[in-house]
Image 1 (tube, chains in turn purple, green):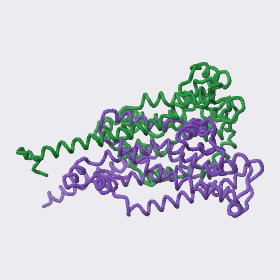
Image 2 (cartoon, rainbow over the protein chains, first blue to last red):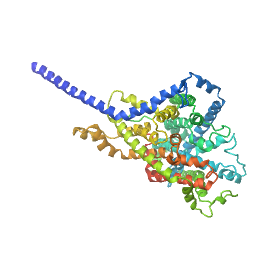
Image 3 (cartoon, rainbow over the protein chains, first blue to last red):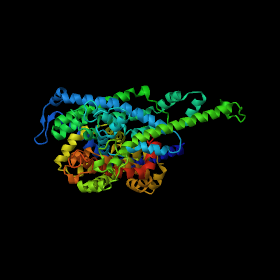
Image 4 (cartoon, chains in turn cyan, red):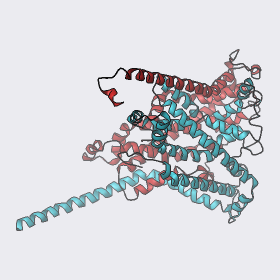
Length: 319
Length: 297
């Protein structure tokens, strides 16, 4: 009996020793982990969290970078409410997003479906459709500015060929925003590729089984493809919304927000106030309104997700 | 239908099979036809850029338009170099892009290793914050960041564009962390038994193993930095320090180049060539890696 007791005791003894060594190993690991995370922690504080708090503060001040910031309470937000140009800018941004995001998603999905088939040359087509997205925003905008030229632009010359008199795209107030939307559709290659990745992860036997059961191609699309890529659609939708609300370069280079502020997207309005009028406080208020809109829309999409996003059961870690 | 797989196929089933094949062939050719039309539509703007870049000024505004430039005026490119400090822009861009690439690769792979392999209290919370910042509109941090760089006297230098890269980029940290997680732990165990520190293991073992992922990050960083317009626009003031992206925009509206569309398009083409070269070099692995690992990553 005694020997058994001694045995268990010694076993406990070795256990504690092992545990103690493990704990010190853990502390060492934790310290190393913090060192590895250090650049990011500093980055988060200096370039994300710090500026976020500061920008909230500035949105309650009057600050032109020359004299000290002056606390004005909700004045900037009050000014926003009274600012007709801000409301116009909001309307234009909403209109741009509501049209360009769904159109872009549909086009990207359609192309991805076509490019998901097996035939010689499919890689060539994938490359072609992706190509415009590697061009810089300025190059895209500069090129399209020439294409949209009322009298000599290739677009109106081609429209003329089929008997349509093209509008003065960039000069006509009611058409300029459509020119921006058209330009954005030229670069759907990015989300197309992400859709393609989603389509390729669908097991082929699902389609074969459905075909054997006599499901037509529409039914297969509706009941297999749509649910099984819904997480990709979700991802593209979130990225699309965030991206559309922040479009700057195209609007800035193509039209500079004009004519008559008809393409004054929120980010262009913000740029003008911050860097042309040096109204840093007012610009911060615009930024926060923009942030709250992005946040609200993202939350709505996230909340709606359980109704239409289906996650495939996969092994391994989910993030 | 399942009888089809049984060796004794009834003769009646055969025509059905061949009919199915022919309808599949038709679908395939329809697909190719649609894709070809689409590709032409996508390529017309590209072609128009190249055609305009090679025209003489007199042939710009012809009606009907001249589809194939005649004469081919190659000297347009030289004229751009004579009118615009394009080579200076290119040099500035090269410096910024390489520094940002070095900073991003080092900081992101370093941090990602900590997130993937080492445990510490609060690690996952920090990682969640990193993920959340991906959704933060850059406008929110813009004004204070600009003011801070201004106080530091960094405006009109490359520092505001380069220094942040050394403190990690959320998306790439995420990407590399996922990649580290997919590497079997046993590979590190041997190093740990030999008493190597985590830093050695990261530098000697993990970096070589993650080359494909690092290449992806490098390519993405190249495009993001090379194409960045807003950063150089607000942080660089003098023309001699400007990058290609903003330099191009100077001349979109400027009087000496603006109306001369052939020069502007020649410059746009020149600005696009580095992207095209990187795209072509990385294309196979770039398009393929997004397609095959894009979201699983």
